[in-house]
Image (cartoon, rainbow, N blue to C red):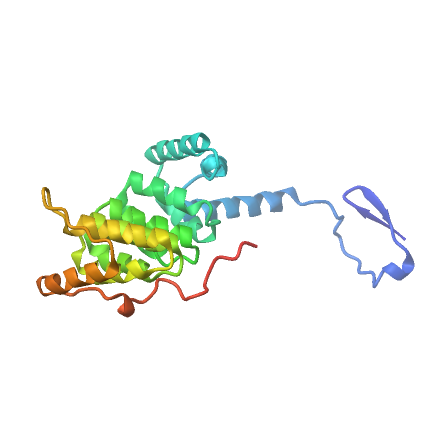
Length: 258
């Protein structure tokens, strides 16, 4: 038996044919139907992202180099994406695609969006503080700190209880930059961390919180900082204890790259 499909002949053995049904279809592609489906799909993407097909293609081309291991290439990509963001609104596009992006891309995207408009980026940053990938959580927390988001202190402080050292470090740095003295007891507890970097940055944050020009405050050990806090605790409202913090993610939760 010979079957004609779009002008091509395909020979089939009788045992390969389950049945025969007669109709007026020729097997040719229906160009009009394909065009209609394409137009409908493109209109849907335009509504979801606010960008045309060509604009989306331009953004994706830049995105491919955003996470390059070469700093020069990734910086050029970041600058190009910021330039595009000044020409067109990228927020709707990334709000739509960010949940499906590989975590390798997300920190760079957050950097770009925060540079364009921190106020519009803030909801994404707060959401990404609980992202399953530690690198994304760390970048979101860092951006909240560098942009002086004092209202996010409680969310940032939860990063001190994170299982990933990079997140604890980002949280300590951000809290130090924000002058969040209420985080002092949690930072002091992290001086007992098994991770050297966590201990170092926690101490650095404590020094930043309590030192004033001409009067540096610094202690080498957890016990000395604990004694200092015992004298200062009454001056700070609503102190944050590490044992009372709810981690941003469940222990053992991590991104699985498929």
